Length: 91
Image (tube, rainbow, N blue to C red; front, side, top):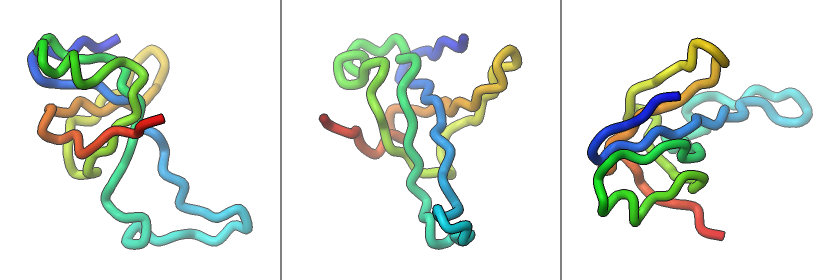
């Protein structure tokens, strides 16, 4: 597993559905730029650790972050700076 430093978080990227249940393909322009994912690891910054917890769902722009792939599992992750996180999902 990856471990971020400083003000970074690692998010397991959620796949974006681009087809409807009936099979219609939704163009990328319609889907928008916002992506979301579950936080799997938080950096060493103390303030960040108070704001973001493992398991939180965060929103970010698809152009932000560094894509990572776990070579053992093939899972897709995104390494984000704190400033790249646009918001959180609250229960």
